[in-house]
Amino acid sequence: MNWDWDKLQEKRQHQQGRPAPDKSRRNEPDPQGGGPDRRPPEPRRGGNGRDGRDPLQALKGVRVPGAKWVVLAVMALWGLSGIYIIQPDEQGVVLRFGRYVRTVGAGPHYHLPYPVEQVYKPKVSQVRQAEVGYRSQSTGGVFQQGRVQPVDEESAMLTGDENIVNVQFNIQYHIKPDGAVDYLFNVTQPDAVVKKAAEAAMREVIGKTTLDAALTGGRVKIQDDVANLLQTILDRYQVGVQVVAVQMQDVQPPRDVSEAFKDVASAREDKQRLTNQAEAYRRDILPKAQGQATEIVNQAEAYRQTRVLAAEGDARRFLAVLEEYDKAQDVTKKRLLYETLEEIMSRPGMEKLVLPSGVSEHALPLLPLDGGASVAPSAPPAVSPSAAPVLAPLSADTNAAPAARDSSSYVRPGSQARGGER
View 1 (cartoon, rainbow, N blue to C red):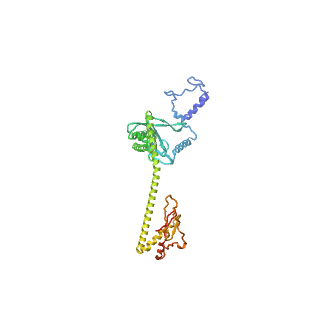
View 2 (view 1 turned 135 degrees about the horizontal axis):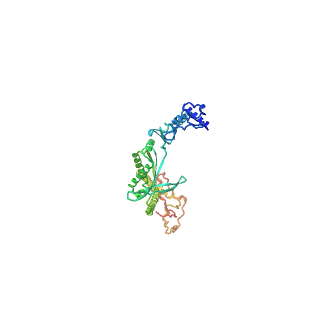
View 3 (view 1 turned 90 degrees about the vertical axis):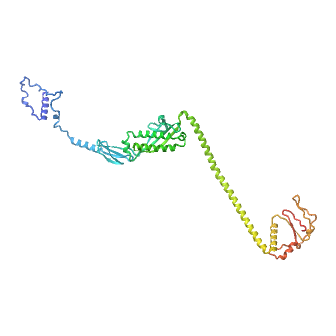
């Protein structure tokens, strides 16, 4: 035990630079009456109960192997902590001791390690969404389509004609390309500011709109007006946000009067349905009527042109005949007579009877009264072929005309003809 104590004392004295005690005097009797086994006096303590010696003196000369390399490694890691990467949909906002310094784009960058500089990475191209008047319900972190929870204190609004309507809508927005600093530092909660500003803008627009317009065909105008007004408010607040779209999810009257509004909506739908049916019928019948009218007009025009051309042809033919008649009246009269006889006698189904001159004095022509054939009182005498009259051709000499005039003929279409004396 004494040996251990002596070794400890020698080590302390060696560290403090004092000479070690003489070992030859260890076993000498103590002049104060102590024996060789007497322990040395306790070191002097301070007022707080600790050793009175300076504790830093005990650390002098202590050597830690590789301490310098440890310090260098820590400094290197601290310096490398300033390397960072900005993704394509992000912007880097660098602060130095809390003051804005610069904005960097996508790619690898470096800033002085913390706490000298630090960087924020807002996603500027990400489209965010805020819901007003409802909350989408999710199952296991996945939002279910069509499952929403209404929030009446946000959706209840007053229209311009003093009616209450519940409006559920959402806002889609993103950070402006040059608005990352404003988005981070101008307002404390930018997303909450966007939502409250959107609710205020919708209330203002609905307050200027009638109930019928809000429930039916005025939604598009309401959405555009709200988007423009919301963008104006956010720019005035310098939020650094760009509004992409405002979409009205549902517009319904209060539950207490919903049945009455359903009846009105049903009547309005019936009106629209009947209007559409009438419009469809109009579109179907008008082209047909226009086509028929065009066809009738075209037929009338064709008939008019035919009649006009025929009349013009008859007039030209009459004028030509008149011109020839003025030149030779007798010849023209005979030619017209022969042409008329030729036309009449050439008709199909006509029976012709030619009587020689003088025979017609003994024949009595009878007209059929009952549609049948007429009966003569006596049969006419036989006529020899040599006695048959001969019609002169159109080119024959006019001197042959008396021979033709001497013959007599009686013709009736569709029946027997009996000649008589002229």
